[in-house]
Length: 332
Image 1 (cartoon, helix red, strand yellow):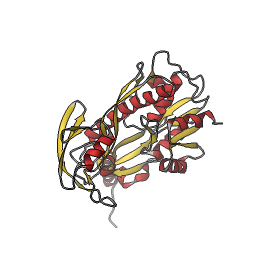
Image 2 (cartoon, one colour):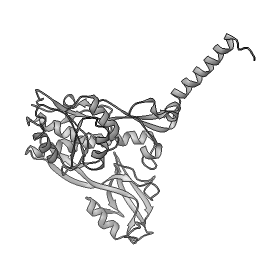
Image 3 (cartoon, helix red, strand yellow):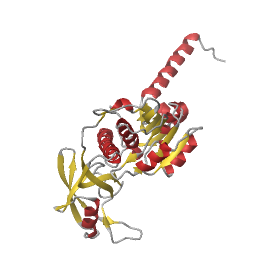
Image 4 (spheres, helix red, strand yellow):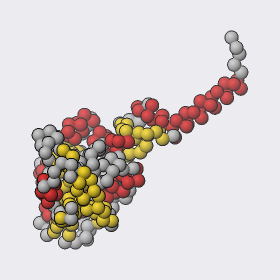
């Protein structure tokens, strides 16, 4: 047997260590979702005369999303509660990391405005909501809109005809035939763009319906009776909307949490409805680690998945802001 000298063993060890370090720091082409401990919302929301609860409070939960290293991709169990996703599941079609980051921050800003509006209306304050177009919520991969339109674009016209609401867009598209080219005027940040694309069949039970592959909601201009400031720093996405709305109502003097520590997640819409969010596994773990008394989550699949990670944490499914308030008012 060939004798291995200590020097060779040391050299081999150095090489193996260097390889391990390289694998740990070199990013892969996949993304990793990691839990983050829930954060109190009270320090983020300010308004004139705002008050904080003497006991308990509202908490929001987020997810740490970043490129997974090669080592993390090879051994997904390196972090507790982690999940790996391909880039196609994280970035919308035709959108890179920087664009996705901009979209996430825009979603956060929009959710803050909607949350303040919903809370103030629930408190009986006068809030003005003026429709301004059709807000793109999702672009379907492989469809004509992919690479041309982005989430958070606001469609304001189709072939020159103004669009104020989602219904206006539906009526405009209903008049188009499959294979026709449509010109959509969109507002993207401070830019106004015109994107042309050929329609395709919706398939299924409506094969004659012309579509470009987008899901939309109503875009609204929100006017509040007084300033409400919400500063979540670099956290992006719309999923903290429900938590923000609860905290704004608490700041107005309404006893929302009734002395409990309450985590909440869910996208909130101008009509007060609560929509599903991503990363519910990591968010449930983050809520549990913060030691909250209950976790409000969107009803349906989100609630089912949250219960799998609850570990004794009480999960409360909600479909609307009013339902969330009722659940907290009757929570023991």
